[in-house]
Image (cartoon, rainbow, N blue to C red; front, side, top):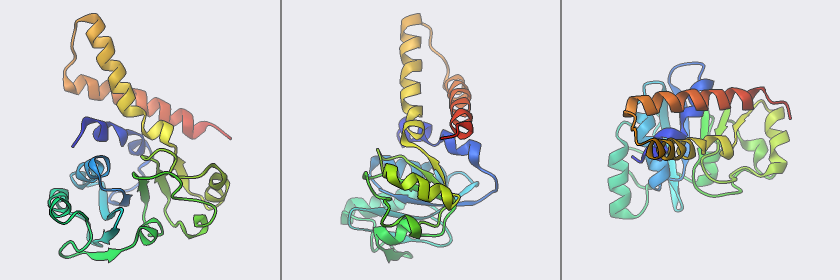
Length: 198
């Protein structure tokens, strides 16, 4: 799993309100698979669906070992037909009734045309622009919280800034200190976004 993937999910931790939040992830490349790997190791989340360009899979009890899906995709070039999973389309994945939907692949996936079918409580935009701007109002009326890509992707950039600071000072922090500083920055940024009224 990339360090970038680990840092990207920081904003959602501020929003969690109950254990075992169900999650669906659209996109199972290096980025998406890293997020799935991270979440399957956290008891607060249950990833029930993932997809790639050819389709997706649904595992109601939750994915237990993301690496097995990575290996399956490596050998078959897709996540579909994974043993013990039900094949679904990307459209079906987006419309699942989950707590957190993570579009981590392409832009313009959630539009005015399909916004009414979106049942999630939170959309965490890990792809660039997966939700069209004209959809924000519809989602807000439905009570869907949107973590915008500019915030959700800020963790990786923030850590890059920390690296720059350390290089300039010639003094290097331990991983735990980097994580603490990142959590502080991202928690503050998330609260500011949450409190901003559009």
